[in-house]
Image 1 (tube, rainbow, N blue to C red):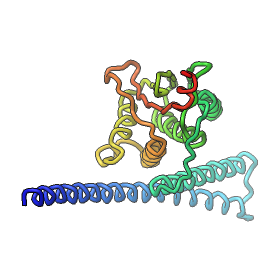
Image 2 (image 1 turned 30 degrees about the vertical axis):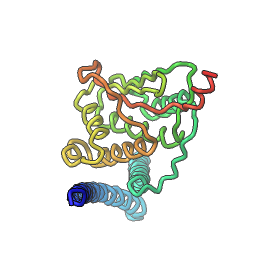
Image 3 (image 1 turned 60 degrees about the vertical axis):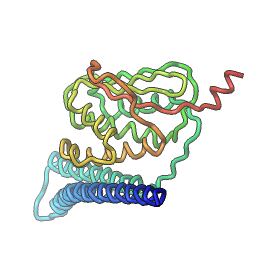
Length: 262
């Protein structure tokens, strides 16, 4: 009888834990749908801007000078880029949440990923000073090259879109026995704290999702999911680090470590 009661208690606890997990999933799904509705409104505005500009250019009753035509074309180009970016983000968010991303974890040279990240960020944000440092050599990281680069790019995009000041954004990589550690630093401590909270509370985002723009919340949710699927987690760090930073640890290819020890 005692054993049966113990089994009944364990079963009850398991059911309760499952119910809490389902409730959390339901809450997060509602939040995601809310974000998608807000982004959908942005898509509608971009579509309307394109239609308005095209209709104006096609109005044969009005002669537009060259400067005005250029303004219309620029509005079409900008709105089209915004539409394309939102569609890619929504698709990526759905695939990451439904676990249909084809994550291929294999040994990759982290330095190559960071070098590509630096080139991309500098090209798209010439007004920002980037400080991306890493050792010239090191053991391979166990990651998906494309999706790690994508996740880091999403986090960087959030920082750069929320903070317009001309300040330094830095990424510093160090290597230890089991992990590569990436420390992302920026002077805006509140923004860094939001990113850290997203990484810490990936399963409970209700309290932090309203602190940033809807598209940035969706970017962080997607980046966190991609990192999680590659077993990339937060490092232990002191909360008073200066400048404010968030640290993630990336698994190293243990086979390469064992090979070096032989």
